[in-house]
Image 1: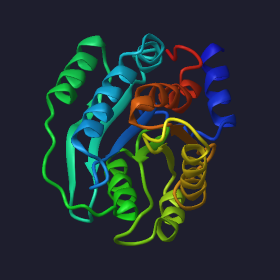
Image 2: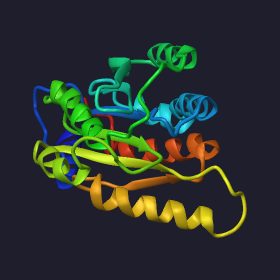
Image 3: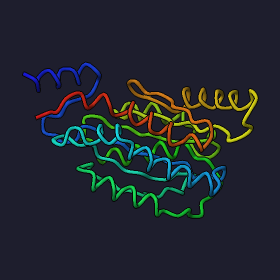
Length: 238
């Protein structure tokens, strides 16, 4: 009875259930390493992701249903040909798995990339990775960015086709680090958030999370992960 209630509730929130699947969510994390991201900001982004993945509540949610675990991967994006997988698809089985991912990210060094921002290509790349996980109940692309696309296909021209494949795209928009005071910072992130909301996100309950500068990235990513995956940990499925 308990399983039937859980599956029924998952169906009401729009999650297709495959009775033979043992993956409740495939989550691809796409990190912006374009030319606007300097070495300091790069480090804040990766370290912020490590902090978010090890937040006690995020850990609880990630590992809450061992019979139907989450599969996670991390890749970097910038120009049309600049995509590198940092963490391949990994089943979030236990804390040891999480520790291995954290070590990998902490030890990753900045590589040379082209300065462009090919956001549409990054969306298509993330969708292609998620197509490797069609058996999961939900497939989510979590894409971080600090600017609008300026190379490759426009995000608006690819997002509907991606959404039609059953993939949700959420965004983490990173605002300017300075100035620390005044209205400029708020207005800039407001404009960028509107852009991502109109051009990038797609799928049921898709949303935009904001970070006021890379210093706020860890807190924003923590909040984003909780929102993205909490709906799929309603109960222990047996």
